[in-house]
Amino acid sequence: MNKQGDLIVISGFAGAGKGTLVKRLISEYDRFALSISMTTRSPRNGEKDGREYFFVTKEEFEKTIAEDGFLEHACYVGNYYGTPKAYVMEQMSKGKDVILEIEVQGALQIKEKFPQAFLIFVTPPDAETLRKRLIGRGTETPDVVEKRLLRAKEESVLMDRYDAILINDDIDTCVKDAVSYIDAAKASPKRCYEFLERIREELK
Ligand code: 5GP
Image (cartoon, rainbow, N blue to C red; front, top):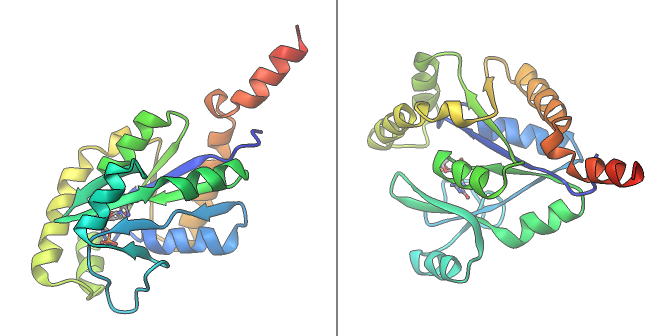
């Protein structure tokens, strides 16, 4: 109902399948745009600068903080991650719903700055599935897997700050559910402010 698009935050435990969910949403629905984050972590095999992330040095990251270039930023398992501001604002003004795939601290910063942002937390059906997926992915050393599991435990405390909990048992269902949650969220008065203003004006 608004001309301006919305901010959709997608978080979830490492290994919850949020990466796959986000890829599907972007490739199957034209209305979404994906924010590419900046990070100081090293690229994994097959990752490309400017596609998965903008891979930068700690100095470059800190320079962007100083220039107020981030909508939010956070430290996750020893590395910085941040959402560059300009692209997100530009896409929202074009009417796109912009997806931020970010961790919990960043998500809560977004909620503070943009109360109309819609926050979804993606989780596997149980902790054992999470552990298996994280180990099975094979992209991380056992030490990093352990750190990510510990982080999941910390993040689970903050899940209730989200607007929706999305259980990823089956990815097709998960994609459909995500879209219906987003559609339903758009009917909330706090996301229909342009419409509310217009109809109030018309009724004067
Ligand atoms: P990974 O290293 O596995 O790509 O990402 C680690 C975590 O950082 C994931 O939970 C991911 O969603 C999160 N993340 C990615 N980009 C950003 C960002 O720009 N800001 C914040 N706060 N978290 C991010």
